[in-house]
Length: 421
Image 1 (tube, rainbow, N blue to C red):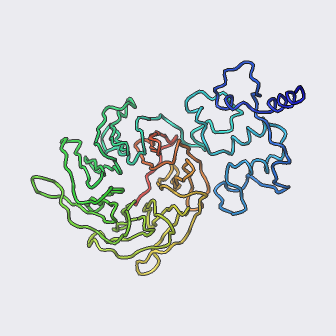
Image 2: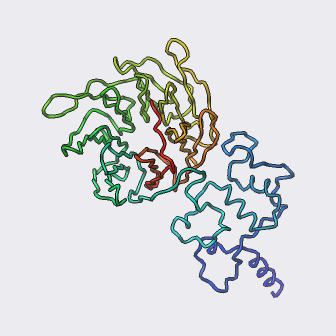
Image 3: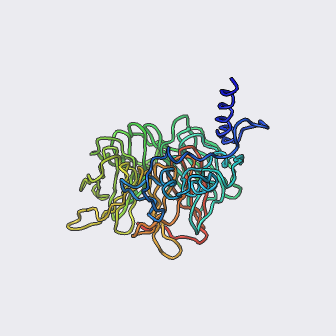
């Protein structure tokens, strides 16, 4: 009996307290240890293979451990007997934010295995967190000349934020999921199930644009036309009208996609649409006819941006493709960048020095920032969950909205230039 008790006591004495790890242990003394215990070398099974952190963290080599993995840490560290050193090294490589640090109650300090920062990189910083939405943020808009920020979410609300105080000034409960939100001039457009709401913030007038079937997942404005992509694969187009009952008139329904349209972009007098059917369609904005279909992606096309004479597309297939006009107006892929995870959305701007910076939100709760055309990593932003969208504001501000409902306000230390279409 004494021998069994001694063995059990010795085993407990080598075990890290799970409540201490979570910052919740209130036992003093505790029968478990309050320190991270290293794994025995024999159990690691990684051999003598070396791994260098000098490699780009977004490398997609099959033989390269994922960025921030413990396997990569142990290969790089070489010292499996020092728990403190292991913890510090793993923190530097981990792309996951400590959920206890977010709530200001992490007790591990420098030994925490997770990040205690919202970003890595120079030239930008966080301003504030706006956490009132309960679900995915699907739209952020700051109308020109307005001091109010609008955000929409699948929690069924549009929130209006005072830019001076950072407080939520008004909540509009729409009773249905807000699946997209944009602004153009004095208008706010809100995508809903089977409709688009149009609000004029100057006249306080409101209109409902009917026609779409299913959720309106994407909207954009170009050539004095509002385009809205619906769940049934149809893109609806409205233009200004002189009719008394509505200032908008449905002028066309663009058909061709076989599944939901999830992203739209305008550039070079063309409309580009990306869909769950894995294709990109190019539409002439004068005739509203499809001129070509691009089928290089192998999964959902999640985002499109027009930048100068280039089209950039992202997909759940983990790739970002750069398209250029080659001959007779045809578009071809001139470069493909591969991420470790699926890409959620893209956004582009130029920094104060005129260097183009691409924001790539990935399915790892982070946004990678790349300098183009080299795709060298400039920095990284982190979030509670995947960042669904990014939007630029005035005076060097930009915003990120993630799938947990967290709206983050960021600021460039030097005012950037917006990427031109």
